[in-house]
Length: 132
Image 1 (cartoon, rainbow, N blue to C red):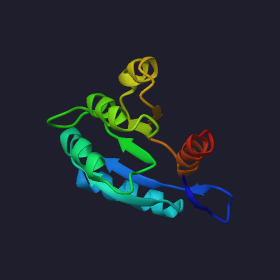
Image 2: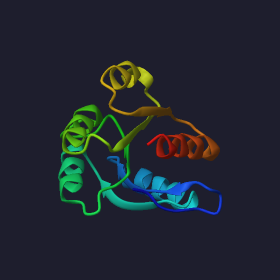
Image 3: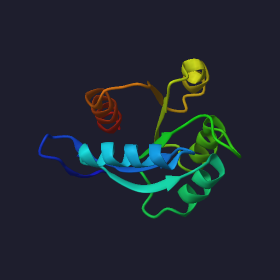
């Protein structure tokens, strides 16, 4: 499922970043590349994310999802993405933790609160990848 392991023993992943701010997308791309993963898709809203995910080949292993976006919010987009592929790992990353109960209740993914440190992101991603 995942590509070769990094020298650290961590599996590499293909990542999709969904955020309505291009600057934030670029930050996440740099962070994931720094961790040895590859950002293969970027989407500016939930509608675009679902369409990109449907068409992706190969599909991402992890989707990093914002919640508040135009056209379709992150939780709704995550539900639609999970309907396409129930095995995809979704990480909601936001300063707003009000969505945590819904994310957990519906088992849509995990939540990482902003601000976070790079080592926290690494640990979070690694735990998702080795849990499969």
